[in-house]
Length: 299
Image 1 (tube, rainbow, N blue to C red):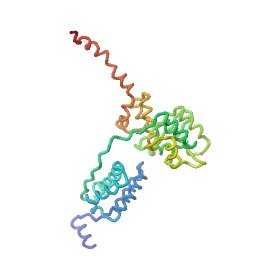
Image 2 (spheres, rainbow, N blue to C red):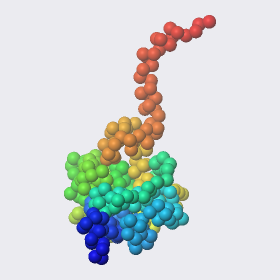
Image 3 (cartoon, rainbow, N blue to C red):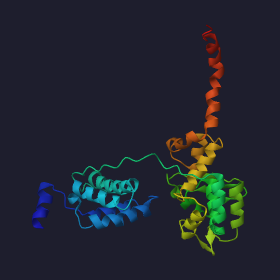
Image 4 (cartoon, one colour):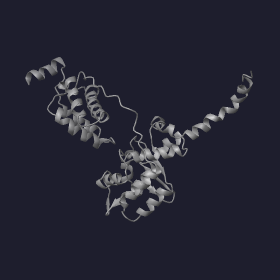
């Protein structure tokens, strides 16, 4: 210990830090992240592989071992999320906390295009009929507004203005940390009116208690009965966005409605509005038509 202290004081060598020290500091500094709970779950899994190691012991071989272990139980996309978290903590340890001199290179798998699973209106109707009444209500609200699961389940009456047909998600509860305005259409208004008086604070409840989780056995069973496979709760948001584009909602409006940070996230739905694009493409027909007729080969 004396030798180590002498190295630190006289030679400027950084004291050895452990992975668990880095994790604790990361948790403290990122507690406001919208994905904080997901990070905690990933860190619990990573602890089995890194919990006894010092930061300087995490090398390429250790990272490769983690990659292979996660691949045995999850997809490449999921494995990437774990590797990205590991990389983020190591980089922060090096660049901000100055606990490390270097970080092993951590390459992520190439991923396919973003998932675009959505329901047809007929499939949605079938699913709604199979759901218990309390679930049917908030699923219908999600399909009508496009809100994320947490924003639907945690919606409070203080964030709803029935008279102005408007609701909002505060910045602290928004994924991109910006408030989201939620104009209420007929379907969402009808759902809200049916919930009034059931709870003093929260909009969606079951047996008098706020709903904490939507991915329940009842939800999964309803999907099976409806004959709908490979469908997650978040795909309700994709369904809403798909229906909006197919109905002619332009990119900038969809971005505002969905609370996306950039138009790039919305462009994945651009191909779903071919009729609108055809109209747009035809706007310059008149400008080209004269030239086209004048240069036709009349032989």
